[in-house]
Image (cartoon, rainbow, N blue to C red; front, side, top):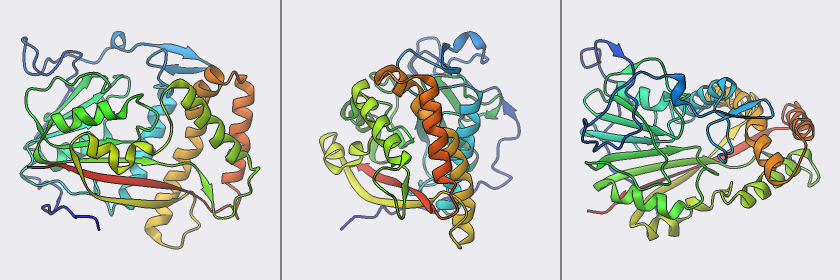
Length: 331
């Protein structure tokens, strides 16, 4: 039986506690323990964005499979909003103690989650990292620090965290065991780690030769060839055990794609999830299939259009499953 975490209620900050003004997010390519300052600060400039263009999309490196261009920024913002009604308008499934002083968001993307958590925890220091700063917002609460960092490398923080957050990073890492080891090393004793990742598109009544099944199989094969599997094996309990993390609870949320579910909250989630998934088909597949399976760009786009048609069929009842895991570092 899963052991549930006892936490304080996570309530929005009162107006009296909110920061009174906003500033340019702090960005840093230096580790937190830099001798120059605890948090080096500079304005976001285009010169900090590494640009690689393929098939009409922009990427931040030569190997990471997801783009970092404007369409992807929009999609990520919509995906963030899709989580909110599914989690009863909370930012996490496992709630964060009000006493938390340091929170880390790995793979922050557009920074929506980090910005929102900073507003709810105005007395906490929020560090948000990503391998690209192309997504970072023009302004954010003063307690948010955006840093350029690759979580596959050794982490360089001078103080541990009360809570570490990851979401939608399946396919990002070649060695999840090493990433989890860094999570464990950088959590306070008793601190919590929450990770969530979605599975593939599914249907209530799917045929084996559907375009969606072809799409799912192709991107998984390509990701395996890239050395960064696009699956949920990293959410299995032994992965956490090996890193010295104790799994407290897990849960799988079934997210409808579309508005067919009669529940108003699921309708709202499904509407935004549908947009994020349809827009994400090309983003997920273009580099993987052209680079690792040798597909032509037009063939990838053609398959994406066919999958979109299947997902949008009135009788499709498409859905995805999102798995959440909460683990703790034992006292």
